[in-house]
Length: 315
Image (cartoon, rainbow, N blue to C red; front, side):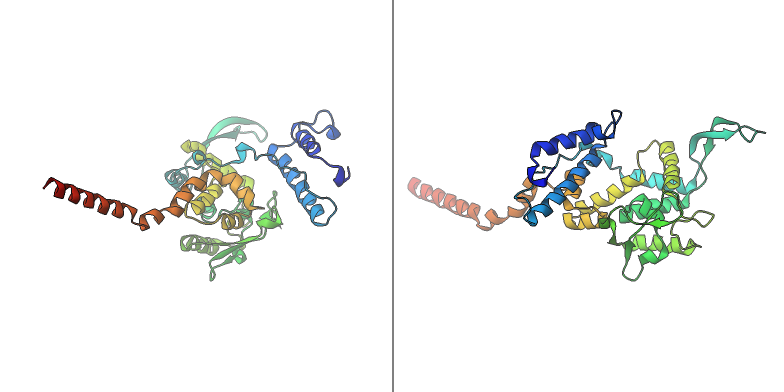
């Protein structure tokens, strides 16, 4: 369809098909995830904005659908630090019990369900710490190498993620994911320790000198979390990093940059519950202006004068 012929109802209908089932993909298609369908509409809107700037069309008729509420992070989604401490301690100590398949004794091909015990996982514990202090995605954590860390400037450069097979570094999720993250001294010390333990240059190495794959690291964390009856994933620690920045007064633009979001709108959509409300910001902004006029003091003086006049009349 020519861009100039497109109307808003066409976009609504297309988005509905993306979400509920795409006829051009076949009758069995169940559609895309709500977030993915919305992302397609976002891309269309970007194209249409470019057409407006180039004078091809007069206005952009694309209206972005509302962000799926499930994409928002709520306060209830953020665990207390006490829970994180328990998880880290358990990872370092080992001993978490988890369900798995055990090989039948004397057989190479037969397995039976059973319960096993997790070995100490100090590298996974370190990954939790770096996730908390940097907000890196799990695939970005797995790809970290010693040359990505500038100890002098106290920065981490993020420009790659680990492939799903764990064999190589590949491009980040998006161009906006390429970023430099300033880090605090406590995280710097942890990274320095990990570098000292590294044999092949990976910050988080297995015993074979290969980087931890996201699937393997996530599985080890799940064993511990389930054993403790807690609720946390590596993405939880990324959320905790973001909400800590917000609660400390870091600007939306800076949070967007450090998280590697495509736009500030994405940051606001996901973390809207953590930014202070406009009403409260307004109260704080204007507080003290009225008091500076000393209106109450003037009222008090007038009140005292009146009382003095009344006393004179009574006398």
